[in-house]
Length: 259
Image (cartoon, rainbow, N blue to C red; front, side, top):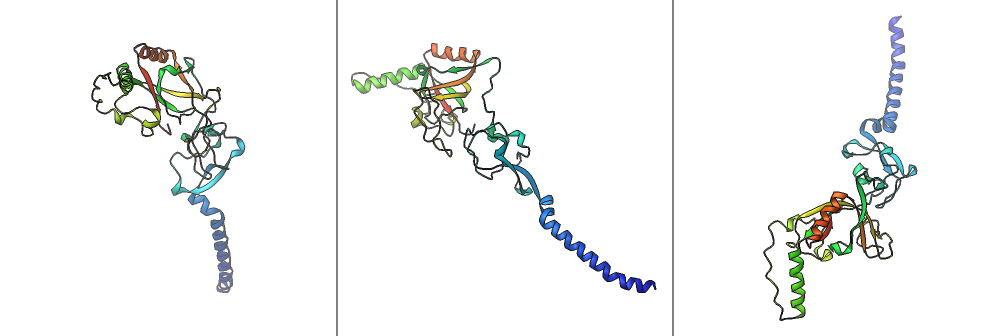
């Protein structure tokens, strides 16, 4: 009798196991594969241009293969909502905290917004934009005087300019990779030490309008020509800059893209 029950039950057990295997395979293909081999990350619903602010409706959850997830990928949307893009972000790109910054420049109790007087500036890139991290590098008085002599000699052959010293070794390597000598109007060997590092608050034209990039992909073309820049500084920073100006120096302003 037991043998008869087993003989009748085995086909039924086989059918149950087969049905269970089919259900498991369907579940694995629809949900299980994502659960075991994918990770949920935050992505933007469209591309973002530099300066675009992220709102609640600008993100969604997406599943990506675990072996393609970047180290600093964002999985919590609260880390980006309310912030602005520091760079162009393509659609469906994995997001990192380094792509974003606070919507407003936050200054500490000892920091202020300061417009750099135009007469302090030796040269600056036309591609400079708000929020860029810049360095102010000294152009010593001796260099400025030699340039005046050279200009005078060009206009009057009877004027003999003073000989220029050899450029200090390593000057060229100190310039940022994105520095454009033609645009900034200086060559390696002219600049002295880095006097200050600062964040640009505003870049404005002659009509006091902020200069922005026309394209979201790059900053080659701006809405107008830069006339004034405002930076975040402390009182100590201002005093330091004034010391160099009183010594007859000017400042070469540079930035490195992505900083």
